[in-house]
Length: 115
Image (tube, rainbow, N blue to C red; front, side, top):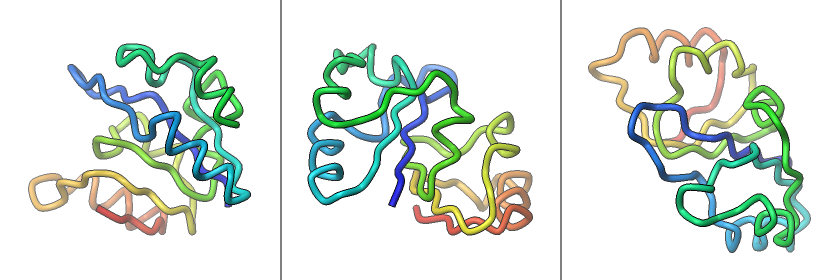
């Protein structure tokens, strides 16, 4: 399975969906991991650390979202809705009850949303 780790874009969100240690575990089990450049930079997780763990560093969120599964901290933001695709697994915190627009986007894109 290919796993994408995009950089969080929600205002004031500095966390990242996966640490280099998690990436190492995934790649050890034959998963391909694509991490958007500088996704963990604020936390001290450099691109070099992700690369050493076996990740491919990609330039854009679009490239990370081309994966079978996307792991994020926060729910997909409006500008990320167009990047999701049918059958894709989105693994993140989801706040669907107060956010009808997000709920509709997940349903329209036919993603598998895991909160």
